[in-house]
Length: 152
Image 1 (cartoon, rainbow, N blue to C red):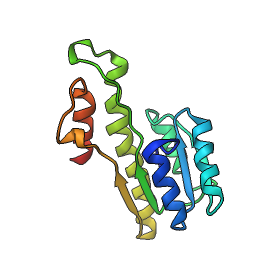
Image 2: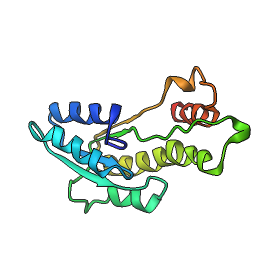
Image 3: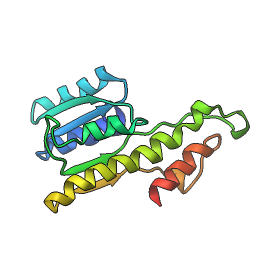
Image 4: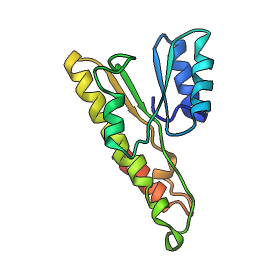
């Protein structure tokens, strides 16, 4: 589960654990938040916190490696995303990185999970998008278009 250190990601991770899943709780840098999610899961399930920068394909591959301590992936929830706000004429290169996380990383994660799932002929992938893809928000052109790409 990418982006599970807080908010929607945490809620989905906890609900998956309640349903019996062992949950890998991914965060980019919020290790305390990821551990808080694992702690929320601990009373009824099993969770493992991992930290990885999803802009790094090698880091993503390591999360899905067959040798990973948490085993094969049965369900992937691609929830991680960034959403800086800026007018297009004021956007910086850092804000433009939204595609690297919201689109490219979503693809690399789903591809890695799909390879694992195909070997066992089972699995499910959920890519989290946003209503902003269908009803664009002001000062969010990069975010709106990245989430439209996820839907596509």
